[in-house]
Image 1: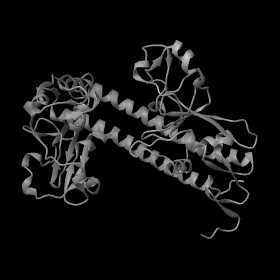
Image 2 (image 1 turned 30 degrees about the vertical axis):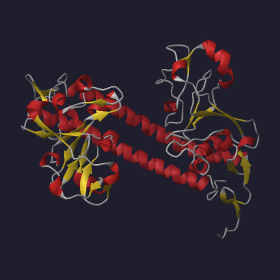
Image 3 (image 1 turned 60 degrees about the horizontal axis):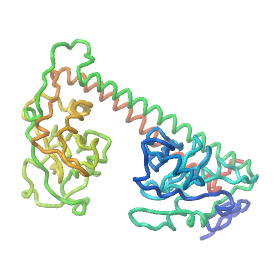
Image 4 (image 1 turned 180 degrees about the horizontal axis):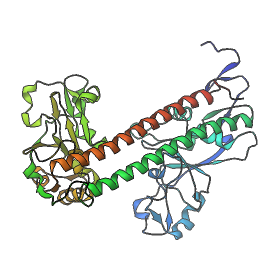
Length: 429
């Protein structure tokens, strides 16, 4: 491949001729965290961290940490793993590998599946530039070429020792690059905070409006409370494995896609090309497993309590053939007492979720049956009040969706900036 003037080919790709490359060990110190076991955890003592504490914002969040080891065991065995404020923690296995976070608190030991990185004092290297590079795709690309573990990627110090970093010639240029990308990060973080606040406001509005604690102007009177068995008839889905799905055939709703979705509805018309397909004769599928506009599809199994109430409302105004799949329970209307748009929200209140938790059975996997879903009691306002509530919540959803689209664009733009700046394709000074 021809290298354009002013650039050179290196082990990390094409970079400007005045840039250098440096091995990672010459810039940072690192070690892998200890592999703690469940029996070592206590109800109190010294907090330990896991990869789940590594936040997208780039900082270590301990608010969700509920694991501790005793001070005695820490002093005896793990004191040399102590990390300091300003250190970088990196996930070294699992689906989050290479995810990094900066430590805001000191005196924390490490948990398994993380590595701690500490920058050496080197006058020619800017710390912020290095942190930016460690979060980039270029760093992860190098790790990807070395890691082992298949479904569970694994890397450690032996891989980090082989990483090579491209460095601008002066610390000033490194600082400028880091500052530009830091500004992009700050903008992204501000959007994330706004979205989180909007989601909290929506949750509060749902709790008030869907329980009748707050009534909209023009509405009064008692709400009915009805079992879901009085509102819906329940059926099962057509069993097919993920391996049988492709881009050909009829639309198929896999229960795993319900679990993974952050939405409570699926619009067949707008999402048609993204919905997996099952190529089978339609005569093999019962009418009860075909999804109509307004049907609600619940999962019948979950590995956690929160997932027991996962569901989607089907929007299928074109009557496109749509098959409900394995581990799903299809709820079809017996009456016209529930507004279609209202259904997107009415099963999300804590009171309804608690009922699903109550009726779920199982240990490792929680399951709920058609019989038990039918017992769940649902507050039912009048159709006009349902429609008014749904409009308010739908408007809030639209505002959040617009912000999420803006966030996705900001992240995409930042990636483009990193691609240009961290390779020297664009020089800022």
